[in-house]
Length: 257
Ligand SMILES: NC(=O)c1ccc[n+]([C@@H]2O[C@H](COP(=O)([O-])OP(=O)(O)OC[C@H]3O[C@@H](n4cnc5c(N)ncnc54)[C@H](OP(=O)(O)O)[C@@H]3O)[C@@H](O)[C@H]2O)c1
Image (tube, rainbow, N blue to C red; front, side):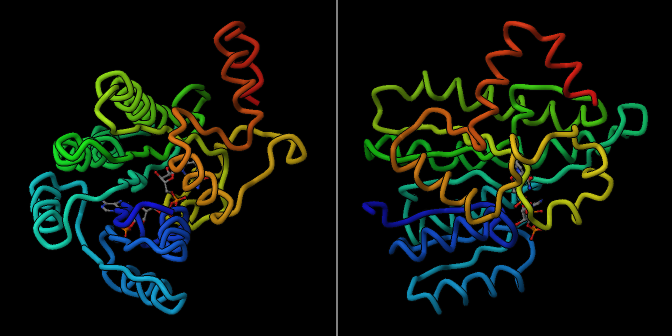
């Protein structure tokens, strides 16, 4: 792999941890961002045990000022990343009438504002250099809607809107932008965001297999390396996105089950 410096947000757990470890194993120096310093240290240790290198930057990405400070420290100490993986995210899937204004704001803070702020911090350096890759890790919620997850879905729509706009805006700059839409991944997300699993639309696991964090990481790393605009895993969601554009009522009925 040609990338030297890779920043992964939300690297202390689940998909971000697996992605950071995969980049580390492929020879990148990985910058690990999340709040929990102990978890970040243990991911960094695992990367080093596998022969890679990593630096941890504990930061609350819901805090714009702290994010800006961390980004300028990173730029000063290690340089502008070759690859930025916007992965940090949280949010409980709840009925609209049970969702508070504070929860909606928190769900927009991370992932959406966190991804905006990190991208805003590093994109100018990438553009000036004429190279860079930025990924936005999201879910089919960026393109579909189902009941009892309105705040989560709105935040994922915001992420996709930002990413798709940057795909046009950064054209010709040497900076690629990849959206990665992942189906259900078996990670601590479901413990970190209680009640969410209960509101997952029912799906036949033979048609829509649950992913491991390692499969998710492989999809992210390969998609970014190939400068894909959109990575969808499992692939069946791509057909659902098209079907939804043509026959939204049918898809809405299926996702309401
Ligand atoms: N699991 C799935 O089925 C699935 C499917 C599609 C997409 N996704 C998306 O993929 C991303 C990663 O999810 P995951 O399944 O790996 O969940 P996870 O295991 O709960 O990991 C979430 C990561 O985000 C970090 N994070 C959350 N709030 C943060 C904040 N305020 N500041 C800094 N870091 C923060 C967490 O670190 P700290 O707690 O240490 O801060 C953690 O490293 C999320 O955006 C999620 O929505 C998940």
